[in-house]
Amino acid sequence: MVAVIEIAPHTFYCKGNFLKSKQSDFQFDVTLCLQGGGSACAWQAGALIPFIQNPHLKINAITGTSGGALNGALLKHVFARHGQGEAGKQRAMDRLKDAWLNHIAISDLTSNMVAIHKMMNPIGHEMMMLANRGLFTQRLEKTLETLLHNDSALRSKEGPELFVQTVDEMTGQGRLWTNGEMSRKLVLGSAALPGSFHSVDGQIDGACLGGANPPTPPSKFLNKNTLVLYFMTSAEPDFIVPKKQSELNADDLGEDNLILKQAYGEIALLRQQGYNVHVIAPSDSFSKAEKGQTGHSVIQRRINDGQAIGEDRHKDLVTSITTPKLVA
Image (tube, rainbow, N blue to C red):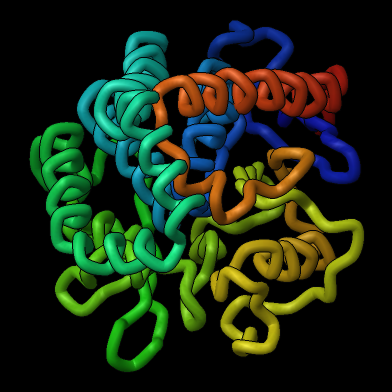
């Protein structure tokens, strides 16, 4: 006997007698795809919380770019060490909040002073950003060392597999790094936005042309019986031409020169192919200026706003699951 679980328009076949099993024993396989977007990824961290909390969702793989790679690395680090039981999930939720509020956020006073300087002297501000790339890179590197401790958990076979996107600075070719290759330096490189950070071992932000933001899951984690959840920091457009991110060119990109809404073209392709893709995204895209805001109050508000949207989207997903029917 198998249980048939319908999540329109898809059907899942689950081994065992679901009706006689404990409700807590039943799990859906989940792949997370986490888009980058600077401090907008604090919103993403909040949106992830209701899905992490659900005991029926088991995360088997995570793909991420830039700030999304950071969130993915935090989850991998916790789940590899503590599992995805109730205690492990609580640790993961706490770690996401702690990372953004206590390690990435800066004081509101400092944030306001930076905003004023940028408004009054935009050219001087850009020059300051370029001159301080080394300091910004070192600060983020130390933050990752504090949060992730070492590379062993990131490379562990325990917990979900982690895939991180970077772009080679010299060739402009994207590279998707696999679980066994993972390191804090690769996560740092994935977030190394040119103009704000130095490249890391020749790797720059995976959202640059040639990369993917976020990357499509490897085929092993992309099948019709897997829930593929895209946590985006750019709003879903009303219309997009289905297109692989690897086929994008410079003319396809917006004023940020990063892969943002264009990633929805790949999502459209996956939907056309019948994969069970769900998007969790803000109603409005974050502006370039908003992505650079890291004041404590802003980060707290983003986490709260993301969690509220996440709860709504999680409720939509849960209510779409019908009563299981047993078939021979």
